[in-house]
Amino acid sequence: MKIIQTENYQLMSKLASQHVINTIKQINKPVIGLATGSTPEGLYQHLIKAYHNHEISFANVSTFNLDEYVGLHKENTNSYHYYMQKFLFNHVDIPSKNIHLPNGMANDLNNECTSYENQIQQAGGIHIQILGIGRNGHIGFNEPGTSFESQTHVIDLDESTRKANARFFDSFDNVPKQAITMGIKSIMRSTEILLLVSGSEKADALEKLLNGEVNEDFPASILQTHQNVKIIADKAALRNISCNYVSETM
Ligand code: PGA
Image (cartoon, rainbow, N blue to C red):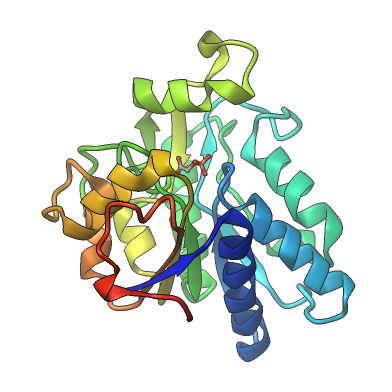
C-alpha cells in the first residue's frame, strides 16, 4: 500500500487525475471503476480539463460505477447516473455504450446484480478502481458486516450513511433505503485501487483502515490485503498517521 500525502483537497484531486490520465494513456482499452460523492468531484474536473486540452480522449475508455441507489430514475438529480453525466460524461467523448452503472430501477434487482458483475468480467475486469471511504468504513456501499466474498449485490443502507448523504436530498426520509453496489470481492479484483481521502472527518476512518485489524465490521480494512493500492489523502485526513510511511510523490 502506498500512501501519498497532499497539502489539501485540490492537490489530492490533481495528483489523482495525473495518475488516471497516465493509466488512460498507457492502456489500449482502459476499464475504469468510478466512484461518486463529494470526494472525486475535483478529480473529474481535472479529467475534463485534460480532455479539453487534447491530453486524453475517452473514446476507448469503459467505465463501471461502484453503485447506484435503488428506486431512483436516471433523470433524478440524486441518482448516480445523473451525477456522472453532470460531473464527467457530458463533458468528454466517452461513447455511451462504454458507460456502465447498475440499474436501480430494474424489475429484478438480483438479476441486475448478476448481469452487472458479468459485464465487468466480460470487459476483462477493472484496471483502476477509484474509491472513496465512508466514515463507517464502507467502500462502494458495502456497509459494515458485508461479506468480503460479496459480488455485486443489493444492500440496505446504514442509517449513518443515509444521514451523511441526506445533505443532497430534500429530507432524510427521501434518502433511499437500498442501493446496488459492487461487492467487496468485485472491488478487490481490480488490478489497481486508487483511494482518495480528504478532510479531518475522514481521519479516524483512514487510521482504522491502515492500522486496524482486517475485519468485515470495517469493510475498507480489506484493502490492506490488496497488492496494488495507492491512497492519496490530504493532510487533514492523515492527521492521525505518523509521517514515517507517508510519501509526498507518486
Ligand atoms: P463522500 O462519500 O466522497 O461524499 O465523502 C464517500 C463515501 O461515502 O464512500
